[in-house]
Length: 453
Ligand SMILES: Cc1ncc(COP(=O)(O)O)c(CNc2cccc(C(=O)O)c2)c1O
Image (cartoon, rainbow, N blue to C red):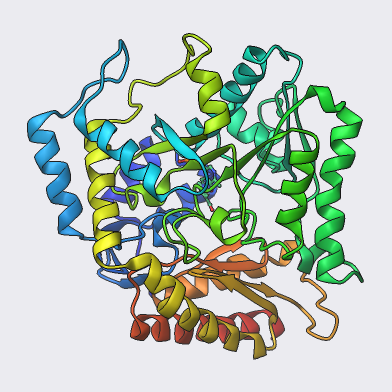
């Protein structure tokens, strides 16, 4: 795709708009990519280029773009009640209906929902909720939360602290006190000579070490993404999560699953906790809950913590847009479409296996050290030498080069370092998967030519 000089919009953007997670100076020179329209799994940029969005926006547009059912739900609610709050012993029908609907979809005994406006606000809520819970149980010193290096839990002070990304911690004096990290179950990058089974147990057992180091009576909870998304679609060995859950139960540590990415059918289950046989005490959701059409988050609360909160007097926490009525209306419509079209079952039985089968074929490419995936989440690792999976030097920027070739070919793939990841809309068809794979292979070929010339 030929790069045109900056348009008036790009010049205006450079003059006034500070983008998230962006080197603004670099962007000002380049000019922001302008995405104008979406339909199904496709986007169109301001130059009229059609792009297959294999990232579903930011892991969130599960129903694809242009779903009239969601637009209608929003419009109807906007006309009837565009906003009201859930404070002062008040509710509105959509919040109540959505809480009841979610309770039927969640694993285990999770019957209660606390609404927020984002995934980060969910994780801030988790920190306050678990510390308040333990204080109400007469154990106020239980306030340490254990998370993982390279986890992503958002960009608020608590979300970024729970996250394990060092560049984020370096900006703003993070992590906050009482939030500590153990290593991640990243077998391809850190497995060493161990079997996946042994590596999964070894990494899970770091939790026990950290609990003993912190003092079991000081630890409130452990938080993790079933599959780390922004960290690079890190799929743990099968031995990992059962061992984590066993350790949490042994030391009576609350288990918090962050399903902001993995929830709402992404893995072929309504929630990935089901796939891993987990009974979390708290579960965070956002993104796919509304297919990204409007911001919404929710924390699902299991019976034990819910009873503690309910009997613990006023919980001094909440947001203006907690359970925004238009967002709840869109979420209800989103869930209804997922149920009507049996999308979760389709990911599990049809399009998920098909995507994984086709994605795995990329593993034969000379640049690819590994392909992996579950449902409609997938990753591949770019390597300089397949014989020993030697990585490229960081300054080569192989992932960014590959990502840019993807855009030139009309495909969005995310680069996390030299890991290429996809998370397409759940509505993607087989022919669109074929297009995705063809373009991904072409991008790998172009990247190979760029790097190996
Ligand atoms: C697991 C998880 N938890 C919490 C959040 C925070 O949600 P909000 O952004 O709505 O506050 C996320 C968000 N995930 C996220 C957000 C922005 C960029 C990328 C990326 O992969 O580049 C990923 C996430 O992936």
